[in-house]
Amino acid sequence: MQADSPGHDNRSLNAEWIEITNTTRHSVNLDGWTLKDEDGHRYRFNHVRLEGRSTIRIHIGEGRDTRTDLFQDRRDYVWGNHSDTATLRDDRGRVIDTESWGGRRHHHNHR
Image 1 (spheres, helix red, strand yellow):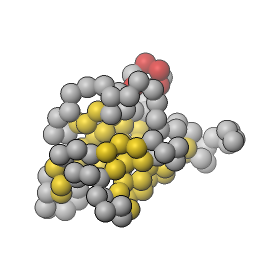
Image 2 (tube, rainbow, N blue to C red):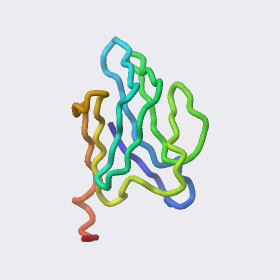
Image 3 (cartoon, rainbow, N blue to C red):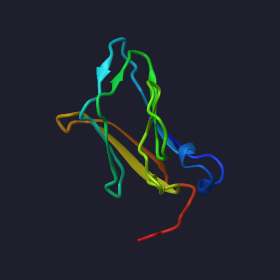
Image 4 (cartoon, rainbow, N blue to C red):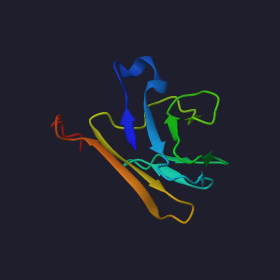
């Protein structure tokens, strides 16, 4: 999983995304799986199948879902730029993957 938000954030919400890659040869049914950040924002997958050896991007902004891109249809930013952790869980609540970023370069304390 990786998170990326190039350039100026307020220009394009859809430039901010989380990428999930299925490294197995078998397709995975993501129905009921969730992606959650440290602040508790949660995105729930609905009728999504990730084919074997394929990648899907979950964008923050609005758009039309395709086989390779999903959109949360949010109007504000979810993933913290300086540091955040995204957690992917399956439909039984088991943690499949976590991805953390930032926190080392920036020493701003927001709390």
